Image (cartoon, rainbow, N blue to C red):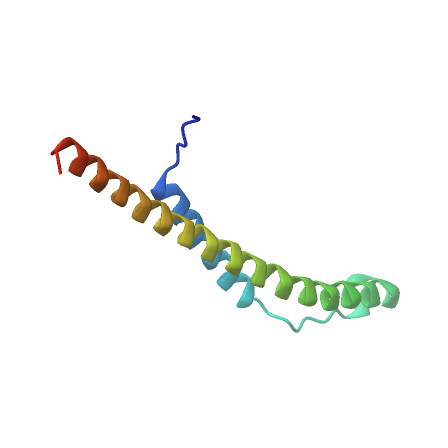
Length: 98
């Protein structure tokens, strides 16, 4: 039987960090515009606008994915903790002769 090694702290912290990253992405500005004079040409400004619109859509998908994975990481840590505590209790019962 293979041993399963994990760090509850790291797994739980991963969940917290991913959810925090999603919150940071959610808080970024969605409306950005570029002046053709500032960027050098109207074609460049239009390309930047297209990128910004596409990024807003992708950012929303990325934010949702980070929230989902973060939640799964935290739920995984909680599940491992419950299972570990249950198994430890059973081992104590067996060694105590119950």
